[in-house]
Image (cartoon, rainbow, N blue to C red; front, side, top):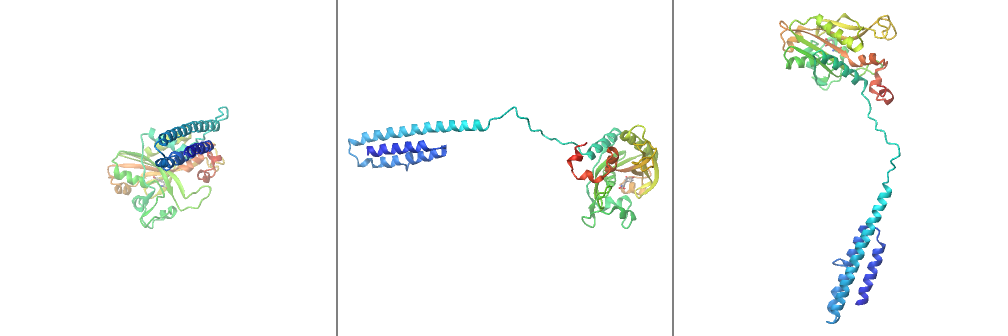
Amino acid sequence: MKEQLSKVRELAYEALEAVRSSQELDLVRVKYLGKKGELTALLKQMGKLTAEERPIVGQLANEIRSQIEQMISQRLKALRAADLEERLSKEKIDVTLPGVRHKIGSKHPLTIVLEEVEEIFLGLGFSIAEGPEVELDYYNFEALNIPKNHPARDTQDTFYISETTLLRTQTSPVQIRVMETQTPPIRIIAPGRVYRSDAVDATHSPLFHQIEGLVIDKGITMGHLKGCLEAFAKRLYGDETKIRLRPHHFPFTEPSCEIDVSCFRCKGAGCGMCKGEGWIEILGGGMVHPKVLKTGGIDPEIYSGFAFGVGLERLTMFRFNIDDLRLFFENDIRFLSQF
Ligand code: DAH
């Protein structure tokens, strides 16, 4: 029995020498010292020994157990130290290496100009309103005095969600939504995405952006419209900028006009940018039609107002001398990083 015990110790030592990880070490511990381990198995045979032999063998067994335990804790220490050593050498950092530059990007040109426009109108006492891009036919057309079969619907074909729901073709429906929820005096701009069933080319896109403006109060006249938009044009394109109003037609304004700014490149002399005209068209606007006021729940006998709509892509193209609208939506870093 004594030889058997020594043999167990020998085997356990050999196994412990060979382990390469703490998991392996654990397996060896269970194999020799566990409840079903080799040492325990031997001890179960103690009953066969004589009364004199028993204490001697018992003592030896205890010694061997504690020797193996000691060996285990030694090996564990060694394994941990080796582990740490390896991690330290692997995770060594060379602080003299150049760092990784984090690219934080830049603002999209449309965002830059939109923020400028918002800044200008906030300075003029306007606040910012929003409306849904998925809009009811009622707000997008009907309430703006564009009934079914009106020819204005032809130029604003869009994507229909259902008979009554569509992707808005203009930001003008926000006018009605604001009239329904606010009482005059009203002074808002409403920037946002609009959609049209147009083929993509250098000046068209099925998705683009507009900024709507609406002012309603007692005694608002075309003079207010002109003064407000002149201040806007001067702030955006420079103090020497002039504007001119040309008669036009929109179903929701009466009278209606288109608004040109003097060409900021040639100052009105005529150049490639303004196609020799000296003027560049940037806005549509007019006095809010009395029918539209009434539909919005505002009494046209008491109040009057002006409205305007401007295309953000167009403003931005002139602002940064961009000649192709597709560039805004292609997400080409070489283009975007210029702003
Ligand atoms: N919604 C018009 C369009 O998309 C632009 C416009 C014109 C808006 C005149 C207005 C306005 O508010 O008064 O062509």
